[in-house]
Length: 126
Length: 226
Image (cartoon, each protein chain N blue to C red):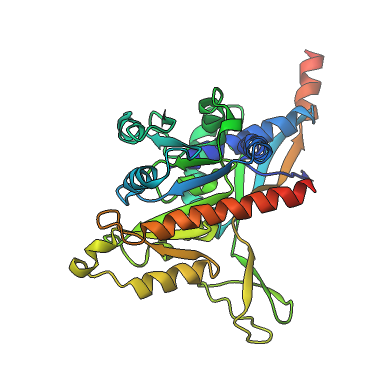
């Protein structure tokens, strides 16, 4: 249920970035979410769409990179993804993997387009 | 189309306030723990027993969060320690701003321990840093052994798992070993305690854990200052 607040925070981040880039409009925002972040991607997509509907940002796409937790092997220092909570190192089969990430909830990128110059041109010729 | 990198946490406003709170707690050497569980796992009861068994000179305060009612604060005020209710009005978790607002008039120089009882919910509270030193998750034996696998986020982020209502073990088909294994699959280093607030079994272990955690917190603060 907190996905609505998270979607709102994503839109705040987009608005801040756009303020720094006058003359552009955002088309897609990318975020990285770890599987251990406790965020449901479907609920987040739904909230994001609901919040942008009939606003200036309608149509803005949300791209979620949903990441598996990461581990580092304590024995051979190999770094790998954890699947199904199995910490076994795929390189040396050691069971001494240590979880080093997977709860991230962070921005990745923003795609922007220049405001359409032809529209601006038409306006000035009127 | 032009792609520009964006940095920072999505909940960066919460993260900023939480970092300020953490710094403040450290400056005043107040250990802050954040209790999280499903509704009805026994957070308030564990707190009642905790306050009942602490020496009256203990410098402890409690913040308790709920969607509605002041009931929990009223239950906890009987023990004579400072207690404040946070009514979220429907929000399913506490956030750092709510903590900041509710502790504004507390004198932290007079405290050693602050216990925050989060809103009963195993999902959302795990995303919101409150500036605490440790998250603690409660799991009662009337719930499923697979809760750590269903709600991995909170078990991953918690330092300690407290199994509660253990007096009911003879009457419920709860497999402790399986619950422990599931929690360790998600978080191999998680510490475990078993407590019955009805019989008092394990309560001493819990109080000792808090004492020990206060000491490691103070040692950690001293090390950073030095």
